Length: 389
Ligand SMILES: Cc1ncc(COP(=O)(O)O)c(C=O)c1O
Image (cartoon, rainbow, N blue to C red):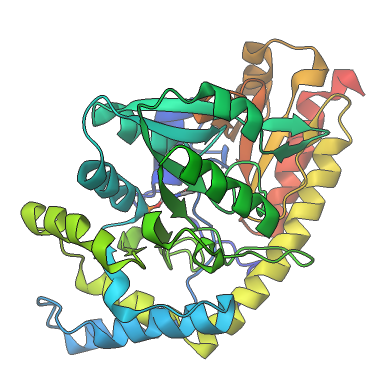
């Protein structure tokens, strides 16, 4: 596991690198891609070994009997998150965005309101809109550069038409790991407004030292309205397998979801099942521990660099490898900031407003890349804002 290794990803059909010029105007030849959330690291050895075994066998037919896959999920959640998962509660979908979309389809109707605590992962709003539901943006409070819930304000915002909350826990893009007390407040909010609670915990393994993630399933009193989402894809950098877990603890809640999956003929792919199972192993766990330590180093380097630019503040992250950077105190218009970052520094970063209310004047930078690349990115940013120093 050599996270310093630089692997050229150009011309590999990589969304992150091969779409950068088209989407952001950042030149492919010397731009640095820091947008979409995948990492520039080689996959873990057990994952590669499993893929090699599939290739060596050479027959790539339909996948069946997922008992060992479910057992691997159970083992991971037990050993890493102290959470006992009923194997019957697991549904496998082509990724988590698909899992959330299926929940919207199974449990709500066109015109229903779906609550988001914004700014939040942009795909949620996109699928809510595309399915004819209404996204209800409840803005998080930014208190001294840290997001806080604003339940009293959100209570007033509810109209009775809202049917569901989609929560990002840990939070993308603010990097918050919600505390137990906060999760209890969210539970009470959902009960008060009779909302189904979709807890997308895809970033749950990427938590920095000093903080502990609590799976929502460990919060009492929410079983009958809770749907959990987890996946190996962020943790192990295997987003290309497009396979995720929708975990529904309450047996009665499972039926509508199972019915939609059956009606749409949804089943995941052999690579997804087999590589995910290989990842959830003791060797995989060691790789993740080393990864988190490496990301922690990148986080410190990136934050020290950008925070040295007057008026620029990176939110202190408790989780994720996505730095959420506030440029508002530079006093510059958004277009000027974007021009400096994208054109002058030649860094492709996600634009804040795409994450909804509260994202104005922010950019999101993915620092899950070899340290030398982070160093270069930080130097380019310093240069692009040199007149402020
Ligand atoms: C909060 C969150 N959920 C879901 C996803 C994507 O999940 P998938 O690739 O399984 O659809 C991401 C990717 O960045 C994410 O940040």
